[in-house]
Length: 135
Image (cartoon, rainbow, N blue to C red; front, side, top):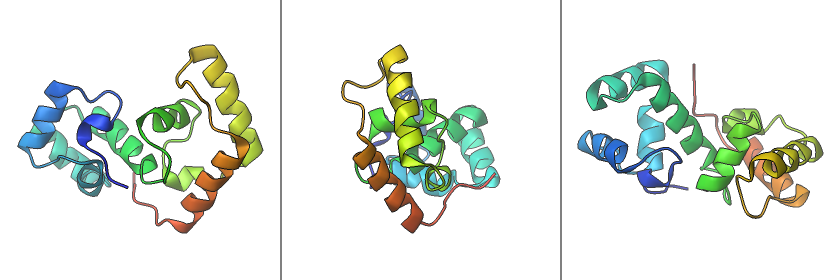
């Protein structure tokens, strides 16, 4: 799945303009260009955005490849300690759902937290996807 770059939590109009100026308009393009340390460094230098922010945005873009995981759920997963598709595929659905529910009760990140069935589907999808991010 690919979304407009503004779909990523934390990417506002100023950051989006910097990314668009270097040819990054979608989450798919961001992920392709920022999937490895060299790419993140190059993109940070070209855009003027901190490399740590580029990494954060790329991790979110990676999670957004999962069908049903858009901006809100990617932020929720990241807050629950799941940064990438590679990490998601190793999670236990019941445990992750419990962590998400507890986190959302405390921080109110989403209006409707995902069910265990939904989290299971995300994990199943993650298991079939090639990892993109390297560190």
